[in-house]
Image (cartoon, rainbow over all chains, first blue to last red; front, side):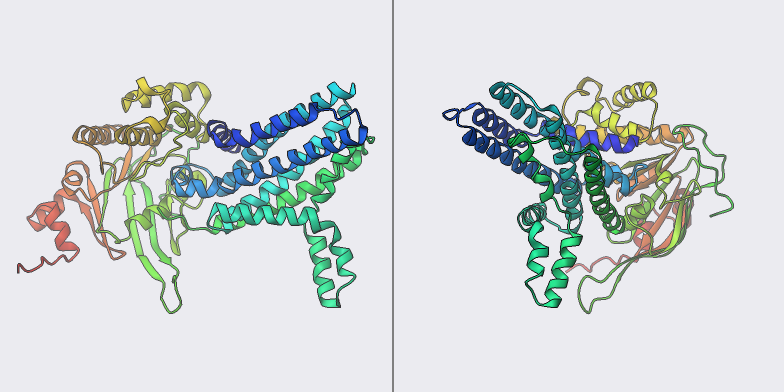
Length: 260
Length: 270
């Protein structure tokens, strides 16, 4: 555990000492702040629309930060050859994978806290109330969704040689899941048997991240809380996918020959 | 595992096993790299290597480029698994991460996190070795003083000169007070005072009863600091023995002994 925390701390330290991380972070925070504070003719529908756009922006930024940060972790270690002094210490490759995951996930969590804090405070200032439970659930399940995306990008970073290729493929896959993931079973019903079977398999195999994106509607329309047991079940669903991707990443990494 | 294998001590810097047990034992080591293209055969980098390195000796591991030194070291450091055979450090199979608990490793070129300061880097590696916090802070100060980087301990590594970066490499190799130091071309690129510093360090480690495995092309230096050497060529062990015995046996300096044993033929003058 100590080794994993050390590795995670290094990831976070690197992120806050790199300037490029701040650019997206600051842009999202400023846009959220500006859009959130504008009130168009006190028209409720327009206000809700602006809130929806702000939350969409937060989702996109968090996905970009998660994928771009994670995709270069292990390739950068290999390219700068810092992996060799590290693996010459009593560190397993499994610990490296989990440590990198933990670092990226915690860093994304910190960014997400700030995004939701901005959004929540601005909304509360305008609307006069802050539905804390909804915000907590939305934040938690958003962060848990990022755990799946981060573990997917980590696996990709061990399969694809270039971080840019990995980031592009991961981002495309995640966007495809968000847009098409919920319709695959409906599409299967319209196809010939073999294609239908493949689409159904795909439907049951992929992590349905799009389910969690709909949580933003609870903040936009001030819907009530979802049950905490459902929230726990959703967390377990996402944790299972994250664990499966991390396990696959470990399987790939442990077989890799690293030559100095 | 060998009968001579010693019990592992998980706490760094503690008991040094009694001589003459092998600190490093390599048994029938074969390292093969798979064929890269269609119709090509696998490359055999190391062929059935058997070697024992004992407690307290400075051991030179020599060979021309492509001889199999790096592949052997990569197996010892766990960067790649052996194709066949086995290697043990303090009786522990090198595939086990705990085998590296008592090792310090200095790579040929310096590769460290440039966004960290010297003390942050050493703290990171020290925590990986699970050094207790109080001991770690004093150890960081001690190794930084040893490599003369104490005054710049709070500066980012990316601002260091090449020589300073190599010295931070030496510091990280010593942070866990290793019983076995593996040095890969430790003096390449160093200026004369830097080389002298490395030599002095090796002597100091030797007097403390620690073991040093040392790969180098600088044969004059090897002759000065090593007790025993092994010469490897085309993946096969050519000879292993005491430097003084080899020099006496062949009646020539180590460089000529080395060239003779690897079958070097001087090019005819045009």
